[in-house]
Amino acid sequence: VDARPPSDAPPRSKMCRLMVYYGPPIRMDELTTKPTRSIVSQAMQSKERVQGNVNGDGFGVGWYDAAGASPDEEPGVFTAVTPAWSNRNLGRLSRKIQSSLIFAHVRAALPGMPVFESNCHPFVHGRYLFMHNGGIAHYGKIRRALQAALPDPLFDMIQGTADSETAFAVFLSFLPDTDSLLPAVELQRAMALTLGRIEGLVAEAAAREDLPAEHSLLNFVVSDGRTVVATRFAGGSTTPATLYFASGTEFTAQAVEGRREYTMRHPALQQFAAIVTSEPLSDSPDDWMPVPRNHMVTILPETLAADADPRAPAAGAAARPLRILMDRIELPAPAGAGAGGGPAGGLAPGCFSREPSTASEDAERFSA
Image 1 (cartoon, one colour):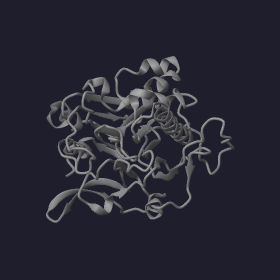
Image 2 (cartoon, rainbow, N blue to C red; image 1 turned 90 degrees about the horizontal axis):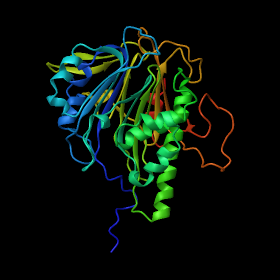
Image 3 (tube, helix red, strand yellow; image 1 turned 30 degrees about the vertical axis):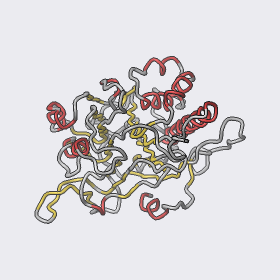
Image 4 (cartoon, rainbow, N blue to C red; image 1 turned 180 degrees about the horizontal axis):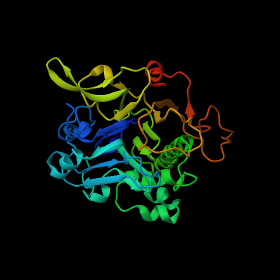
């Protein structure tokens, strides 16, 4: 009897929840605790997770200085292995920290996976923050191959045992420079190459060792303090982990049917604030749109093209319009397949497509 899972089986992992905010400076508790479905609420009872509904195996928040600090400065990070809902310091910090770019993550570890602080997201390296919801299929079989190609400084930065931290190191290895601010297209390209490297090694391992069918769930979010790149991706025909998007002028509490509810306001045509999150932060359905399957969301200041000169202020700059791109992910062809060519439309060759997809209506709504 073949006891293998179906061919579209996700990796044998639980699901975390994550959220990133980019926009006018906001106090962290207006994202982490105050909204009806805040990230802390999702830690206690997520509504759309594939397996279970509790994310109590640690948490983390990251933020960039809202006061306009140098873009060379590392973001702030606070992580702990306690559940987010019971950590008093998270509440205290959230009421005091104000930022234009905030990461938040609550973790649900795979059974047997150590609950160490070093495994808590977001991970940080220099100016970069990174977090992940999902899992890499057959990670134990491909971990050595993923890490073997890393340069020594990036191999040495891995402190925990999570597949997510290895994915972060792989992403950094595809950047031409991890010390300088780069055009958004370089982050897009590195992200697509990371997905391609993971998917290629998973396929090779499965074929070589006749492994049970599994497919990765790779919802990644990364930022350098100026550009945010987020993916909703699943290998094979697997349904990806949920990911939603909201944009407008500001995310703030308003009176709704006699109660205070956080909503994304739209008094102006331009977009000044954006949120990407595993689950909606509020019960305002008109605010939240699902990111289409195997798509990448890129958020950057409107004054910068995706391939513009990177010498621009990071998230600490005063609020300004955002440019929001939605691209279907097309993984680079394997080495030797003849893929290549120059940049087209400001996007990395072989990585993206703006052709209409099955979710074309949603994609059009995301376009700035």
